[in-house]
Length: 325
Ligand SMILES: Nc1ncnc2c1ncn2[C@@H]1O[C@H](COP(=O)(O)OP(=O)(O)OP(=O)(O)O)[C@@H](O)[C@H]1O
Ligand SMILES: [Mg+2]
Image (cartoon, rainbow, N blue to C red):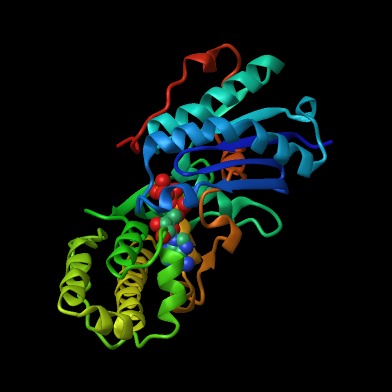
């Protein structure tokens, strides 16, 4: 049987585990979202997230093994998200991974969550070969990357303030929609006129991006409306706001492609699920819909290309909250 990697992901509000083969075939991928728990607060509450991960991590790992039809004894290595993310949440996954690996004398592969998002593209059945230019747009990050090898990437530009997913979430909140807001705006925008409002796309030097001005513009537009007017214009506001984010992302991605010269273009991260972004970039390779937001298949995939640490070396590993510079 081929080498089996157990992936574990707990960096934010999804508890996830997956079993992936060395050749990138996903045998199982289980994601338990805590979104419902956090919705009433309008965002992720770190302490609640850690406690829930603690309750869920063992059953989710068990479910991933069961779905794959394998036992822990069949696993050859454990890949786990080390950072960036909420440190308490990360520590739950990291500790579980250490315990599983240590009990069986297996190597452990600490994985960077952002490399994980990119490694979605390396999964079967149609793995992407570098080089390519990549937009990583998620809840916490927005990066333009030149990817020349599966082991890493070069950062060409990033957001100076909010991430694209965060801009969607904050916009949704201003519009009175639920959390997380990206998918809600996406859905509502289908009934709206994207040209109804002209929201600004920030002009930032180089390949960086900025979304804070856009958010303020939406705030001003919403403030001027009565409850009844807001209800009548909500779809137009959502469509116009989404159009501005998509324009900014697509424009920057095109500029990045000019810089790298890589013919292949890819988009990963939660915002890669956005239907207008997908339509705006018909030639780009998008992560499969079910693997855009956090999951552990992408972590197991990245673990195939990252350094494995033998026991007992990994017992001292710590989680890191923000992306290393
Ligand atoms: N259809 C969609 N359109 C736009 N945004 C979306 C859509 N679906 C999900 N999102 C956004 O994707 C984000 C979640 O993505 P992801 O799980 O990759 O982020 P994260 O793990 O929280 O952040 P990071 O990966 O930076 O640590 C949320 O901000 C959510 O609103
Ligand atoms: Mg993520």
